Image (cartoon, rainbow, N blue to C red; front, side, top):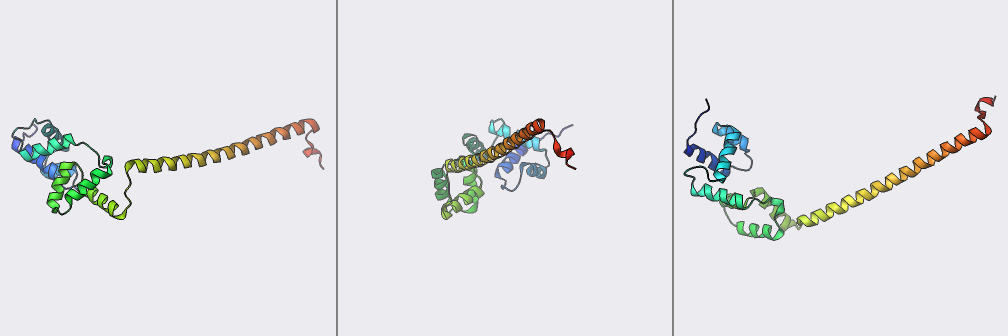
Length: 179
């Protein structure tokens, strides 16, 4: 018989899952709470669909912003990244984590973006794609050159073999008569 959990327990479990640090996986969180990962995942889905009763305002706003802003960190434009860095400048660590949850990114992404802006090594995703495409084109070009060189060597070897057979057919094979 599977254990029945109260709505309050489910809501607290979902809140803890949303407020966990980035280093803690969902599986570790579920183990800590003494439940299965699938149950926790199901409760999170229910909270996103507003199916859990008495869901707190904080968790409701978190789930709402999470569903509204399903955007991967690498999809953020440079302008959006800079705005977030400026917005988070001077906030306490707790407030930074809260803002990151609202915006759907992890604090380490913001730190990485800030460092990229400081060092000047920031590149938009389109620039990275252009560099990658250029590198791939150069690699394809080099591989095609190598393939052509090898094809020419193979054709030359085949031609020499055919000529040797023709010479042997015309003049005969004298290798055995050379005593």
